Length: 458
Figure 1 (cartoon, rainbow, N blue to C red):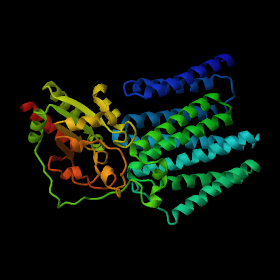
Figure 2 (figure 1 turned 60 degrees about the vertical axis):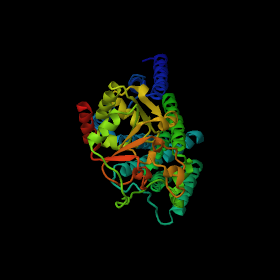
Figure 3 (figure 1 turned 30 degrees about the vertical axis):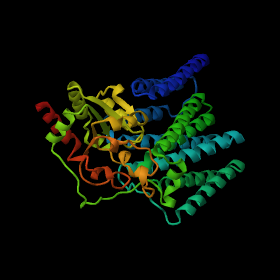
Figure 4 (figure 1 turned 45 degrees about the vertical axis):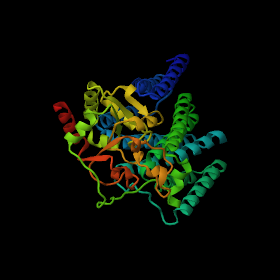
């Protein structure tokens, strides 16, 4: 492939990446956006093989591509919706780790090079390693292979500062006086810093850190593109870094807390995370599926609030069936989507898209909140912290200041819950004890199936 055709193909790939991000900005076009991004990545890979550059160990490269494609394809098809955040965290880590390793290999193969290139190598090693080890910790937290609560290392603040300072010194020293042992030391320090960076983050703040680490991965890929002299990597990495940064800011805003509170709040006791058991002695009002079906059938307006419990039960299809039945009876039905409902940005949008829920029925928090006061029944399925009034009233609550869905303003509230255990933030929800709240206990899919059957029988 001639140089001109190679450059043209890379330009097309870059445009596809940009169009992919544009498509991913809306649930209606997200599927096409994802396909455009995949097409751009495939084109970029093919161009590399036919661009005329010498590829050493070609068989090993092809074998690695086949193995990686098989692992990625199987994982993507088999992963449960509830485990999607863990998969994203792993993908982030793999990207950052790959960028760091490429820079290390490039240094060992080509030597230090000019100062600017060496600085880019050092930057890639540091940021890519932080992204890798930090993403592994977020995966372990979300997969519950370790506690999701903040983990505070003894004298953690000072240890983190010390490791960060040592990393910075090693990075500057390596640029000023390149030495292989120093590169290895920098790699180790960066990996440790990534772990210390994420350990104090817990609970509802973990998805924000995933987004931030995604931005880190993008920046490391862009820097590795400079090291390799690959413009397409620079473009792709910059796009990922910029979009990840914007998403992190939006998620922090949705949580009602600055990003510094997310990252360092645990040292001050303010990180949103924890677990609890609630007070079993406080009275609540429960009902049968038949009672809930009657409440819904004779309402004029119903708002459905999906949460992580809906994803766990894989009940999105049943919820869609319920909404269709109510609509057929003349009931106005909408879905209230909180920005951080679930375990990752857009979790509920993707979940409901699987059930082919009309996009027009999905309403974001700012749009739907004024409608709760005019709503007859709100059905909350698996959500807790995003509807907890403690975010407005309790300054000691870890979610204080987070904008919430105002379900407590509706005429009646129905909660589908497995038990009285609190949500991810580990605090009770006073709405559960409100006289106008009815609880339907059990698995969300089983409960919704019984409500649907009762509704059909009316």
